[in-house]
Image 1 (cartoon, rainbow, N blue to C red):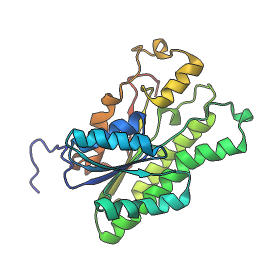
Image 2: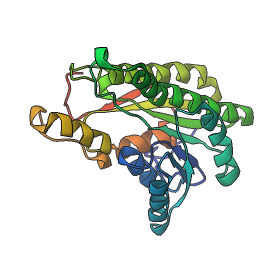
Image 3: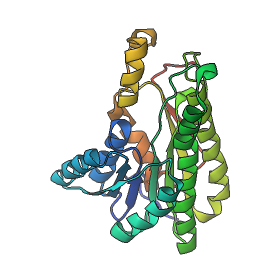
Length: 257
């Protein structure tokens, strides 16, 4: 087999990518990046008005995107959305499971409703969506790329009122590893990104509660979402054809892991 030198490309022309939680933060950035590299992007979130603004921005920059309302805690919506996007844009070959919420409470003070909401959003939703996409790809005999957004909280917990969030992101890591094994013969690569502390809407809420945390890090800074572009593109492009079941930690040395 003859491969190009270097064997690397970020060309996503002909691909349809589904991004959850695309109304703000990292998801919004991921959608822009995928579109800039030629993918047709289906942006999903509960806040349809913000999605419409993102679609307009992507199209103004020469990209292709459509907005779809999606509540990732609603199983009926999850099982229907891949087919809806396929009918409108073509078969989905890239999935970015980005939607997630924090808990922001001590474990002993959480309501059952909060526990259910965090686990439904951070674990159950991504699992159902990944299975729906994989089912269609397997039936069609086509390869795919799934990137789950985990967190460095999956590997360490600072005791700051995020025990459930840490638990849920640990489940995302294990889900990534397990599904990569189940679908490896189908050429569906399942990987994850574990970001450290990056500037985002979710981080804004944490900073409002805890104050500025950047001075406590070795490099005394938060990540810029743009610093995840290369990791995302590596995992969704042909360049990572031989990579599956991997969790890439991107945290600027903030943790000891």
